[in-house]
Image (cartoon, rainbow, N blue to C red):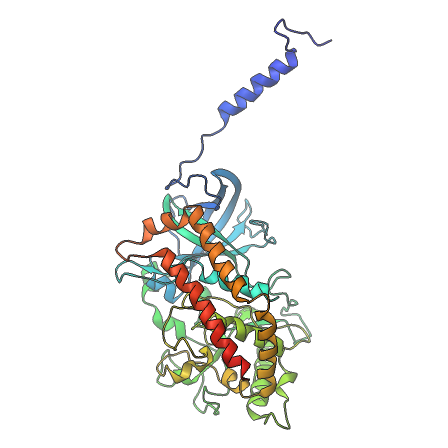
Length: 479
């Protein structure tokens, strides 16, 4: 029988109290962050490389801890490296790729914030340059808003979460923690393709973009990447194939894979191998996907749209329509010609998406007027190495494509892209960041003499979306 003490406690209860007190005394004190986040609901991520320098390649081993309301909720081993091309060179607030690893350093799928488990993730910053006194996306929400809009119309875009980042003891501000677009049943959901696959029809992921160095970057010192502009345009037969047609719809007669920024580079459109990547794709697979794209382009450029419309045999036109709508609404100046994903599933048609990279979208970025289509880029810019491919102006000449855009746009404007929905998305996102103190902390770090008026920037974004949507109502209504 349990002995009862005079004070009324059983011995077991007393032992429990003593053990509980001992456990409380053994608990580590709350972590001391580089900034005081108060009672913020925004996750606070702490990455520690244990003094090792982060590179472009290879990835640097590190630990990533996720805190919510100052409580450690997740601890994970990772490998981390820098990401970005122009944004890396221009910005003091760098972006990062990281892979989740196990105790042996092997890649392992992990879930964050309830997202489907995977190994590849990104931390997207916002372009800040203190010397030249400029900040892209003063609202901190361009990418977040664009991806939310894409998902709201039923198209996959990278799931993302606002976080605050501390790296090796230094607070770096507000970041967007996001999925890396890649082949996965919960991301770009196409079937796998490997060197032993006998069905060459897919799946493939291509990008129209600047070149990523990949393995060629391994071992190069960081200063190399500060000015490696040539590598952005270093296309080779190993990493890409070139369209047979120039941006003016003519046949290209000069050889592919010329030196970076050669005088005729602006005429070319290259397709980079994303999946299978350049290291894994076979010659037969390269030939298949290049021929398929060429067949589509030839059909698109030679169909007369009155008696012949064969290009639809090669593409899922509804994905082209939705890609056009989101990028045009967000006035993504980089769309179609950079940061552009295409996919082709096994036995399927070529599809556009997911949308990606809106740093110079919305009311930022210049180059084209606020009241014109992004696809008319070539009418305003002539010297860019990455010009608008010939597809999009040609698609807009097809009355059926225009009719599909009109029908889809008007349906979306009744709900997912209504004025009320657009306004609420911007306002609610800004309120969340402000109420949790993240805006103040971010600009305490980065607004040194620039003079960001956050409330005005948010108001400008909200007003821009209303005006852009109204302009699109007028233009598309006349289709």
